[in-house]
Length: 310
Image (cartoon, rainbow, N blue to C red; front, top):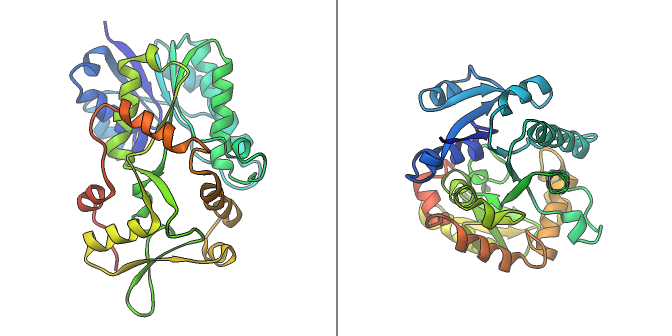
């Protein structure tokens, strides 16, 4: 009998990628029966999912809905939506804690949580404002304290974030060129993942061999590139002149539409300590070697999803 795999964020990039991967994998599609969990079962994406899998409504602020969604589930892929502003860390932490608590209450056997690196911890307290990372890291630590098997998927920077409209998209300058402006050296390497194409390859590895990955974190990156390499790849694929420009931290913050301090710290921390901390390269290489399937390069992603630069 197939085990029920409850997937949170089912209509989003990560949850949707997990569902697609499992459904299209000969082994995993026989091992697991998908239960797609979403806040809005009437959305277009949810209705499309209903043609393939069970779709159930649940909201982290509605404990009864979580209880219904997780009843009978063997494994849960859980994720939380970032919060911003006052008490952002505690709000997201409490949302993740609610999912974990109900999962244990309903005898879920295994939790796979989409986490992020503990930047405050590995920076020795230097960077304290990157709440979208530290909230997930705090949830991860809570899950580890529970009497339930668990593993963790920690995705790199989404290639999707380069797509407009997004402040991380190249911006057109007065001379007609396009500029990627960041407060980092052009030689600094960052880690990237095609969240839609490759999330399932990492989470699928855990689902295929849960005992092997129990307690482990997969630092999931499809590739690493310097900022000047990113600009060169974008130029080659789009046919436009895209350059990288290192700017001051203050100029970078002034250009941000929201949470300038957090994003400034996030880039500063990565340049100083690496995306995943001091052991970034080793951890990323280990995770990539365990992924189920070849990972997507930035060039391949941009060819499949052209940047709409106008």
